[in-house]
Image (cartoon, rainbow, N blue to C red; front, side, top):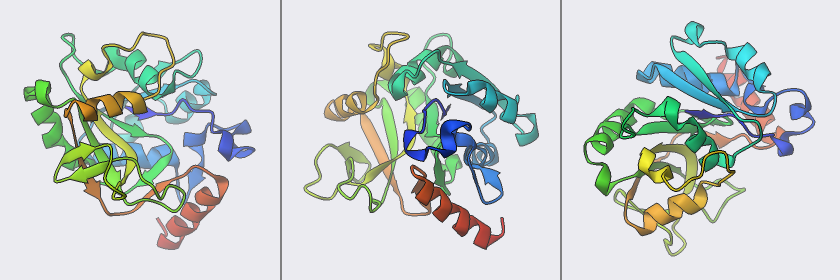
Length: 233
């Protein structure tokens, strides 16, 4: 699943007429980098949620055929926040028994992480969901978030790392059971749910030290555009 329902307030005025995931850096739109990397890793079925200017997103990306994937959309009448949006899309994401874990990525990040590395995690979580409901990819703390989010010891996540926390990249694998208490159609943030799973020792993670950027402001979009244009992608 690619999360694409946000309004992108910090990106205004760029997002007054264009959904944030469709903003361009280098040769492609932000969300296209995600779609292409997912396709390269072997993911073929992608769900994209949207609320703000959702019809523009659907018109731009279509059914995904030109990327080698199948895209379906989870429309929200109003923004349901991250956990609410994922819960709303569960019928599109998991199997009938609600046992199939899935990968979720933010549509407004640029990351050169190899999603293929997560296929074994998905398989493991499917086979033994009772011990793990969450697996997060963490990155080095950017200058705008120096305190980080979660600590990582080996592959175990913790809430307090005595100043050694890393930043959640916006890339995570979740089991449907993680959202069993989320009421459909109600806006719910993801962070409290993640913290609860970490407290219950049902969350693992890994550290990615490669290229990652939270494209949250026009300045960071310009930075990414310069980087990618210099690479002549």
